[in-house]
Structure formats: C-alpha cells, structure tokens
Length: 162
Figure 1 (cartoon, helix red, strand yellow):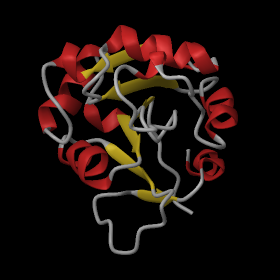
Figure 2 (cartoon, one colour):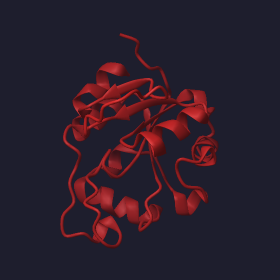
Figure 3 (cartoon, rainbow, N blue to C red):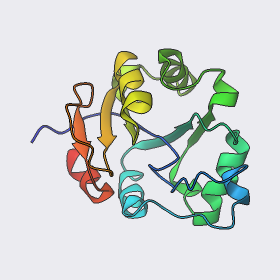
C-alpha cells in the first residue's frame, strides 16, 4: 500500500464533503443539507495532522455562501482555508484554479493532495498542476483513471491512504 504524503489536503465541496442536491441558489439556503457519508469522521481525524482546505467551482455560491453551508452541518471547523472560483477567478478543471489555491496557502502544489468526486474537474486539473490526487468514486464508475494516485469508493477509505 503506497500512502500519499502531503501537508495540505484540498477537498472539493459538492458531493465530496456535502451532498449536492442540485437545487436552485446557494446551498446554505436549501431546505436540506447533508454530509457525504463517512466524511465527518475522516475530517475529524485528518484535521489533527493535516491542514484541510476546501475549494469549489460552484456556480451559485461564493466563499461566504460555502462557509454558511458548511456551518449548517458543523463542517467549517475542520477547514482552515476556504476558496471559491468567484474568489480565485478560475474554475476547475483549469490548472490555474489549483495553482491559485496553492499560491494562496503559500505551498508548492506537490505538497498538496486534491480530493474530489469528479475525475475530469477535480483530478485531471489538480494532477496537471502538480498535486497528488485522490478520486472519490462514490458512483463506482468503470474505467481507468490514470491521473488519480488513489481511487476510493467510500470516505471511510480515505484515512488509510494518508
């Protein structure tokens, strides 16, 4: 088993930390918000040894909206840095999105691991920016994922790779 070593864990938001029900408007205003199963326990443990960052390309939410949604489930306490495409000026999968996050946290991309549920948006862009990657394949999509260093199907698997 090859573990990934990184100082910073960068999490995608929708369908990686919180369930994206694809409703209208900012998530914090939705009637229903939920954790992704297993992520709360993973964050509780991982945030003790890593700096956890959250970065999103959400269209309807800026950074403050994201923080309000995270607070509704109690997730905001696990993250020290919060970034949205509206703040960064770039969307995933553009390499510039990932490099901007690394610049903002004053770290080299190779010391960062991106964790996301969307292979094309989260994993390819992060890998091309020089980051390590963990593809959260909750849907159990078939195929090869060459830009993913690790593929997991449940968040309970995350801790064993870090």
